[in-house]
Length: 417
Image 1: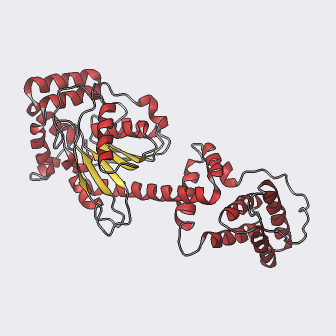
Image 2 (image 1 turned 180 degrees about the vertical axis):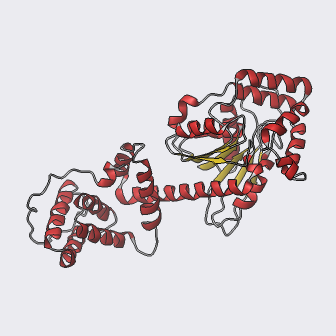
Image 3 (image 1 turned 30 degrees about the vertical axis):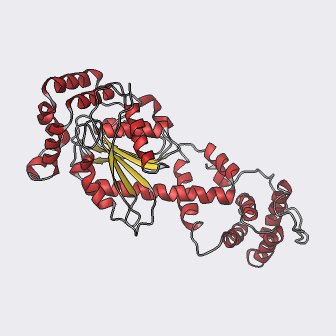
């Protein structure tokens, strides 16, 4: 087996884009990066348009033909090499059919780099080894022209080609004839050996799984199972589409990708802010407690609390800590208060300033609430003597609140994480 040399094309982000992220698009067997033309035209005009890299399969489009066998894992390594050539780093990846299997392989083998995974009409296993062996033998004997009629039936929903006689569907079938026969056959054999069904639980990236109702190859039922096997996947079925959704409905494809990229961008920014404010140890504990029942809540906290509100520039981090401490004292949320006393210290407030915030809040929240808050604050100061060193921390007298419950060093956020 060998890693094939692949090539692609880059669509830069417009100068007005607020994003510097990279979206990698991978085509299906028998097609090229042109499969994504309509999608790229739409995504590249959005306010947060990413850079877009399209990579062709061996012997397809811009990628050179090969006569050496390869696996889907080898294709993933070939795609990764192209990504590194254009700057590397983390990326979003989407693929249709064979391209989707390569995208899945990337999500499993370099999870630290894959920001999101989108699979259109694909699977952790597609078809049977016998079926792919027969297709490879047919193409070696009679060329890719011999599979055009079958591809037309598999690729498009009934009536699509007739409704778009001069559309991209006919062009895609003509492009299939130009694909290198041996490279196509080797792609078939790579699919024959691909099976990642037992690995789906290890996919860490947010995933989008899209099926076409008329797809007889990667059926909606199979793709729903694919989504259910991943920790964080959204399943969508398009009633009017078949196997080449990015070509059949580029508008809906662009909308679905845009929503995923937006969500992932918020999540990434939120996780960065959350770690900066709360510290790695706290966030790691929260993440370790994630269950299927609490995953949505954890995602909500990261995206909206930390990715949006805490990331807004109108207030400084210390100012946000003051507002948060006052709100928590008023609500009597002592466990959350402990967490945000620690955060306030990380954000630069001194111990005296934190005590003064609680003292001031007593005027409006009441003495019992402030009394309990000062007790919680004192516990945090005692467990972290290094925080706020140099401050005399004098804040007057207080007593333990009557009937206080023992302190547990986890906030509601940690418990629900």
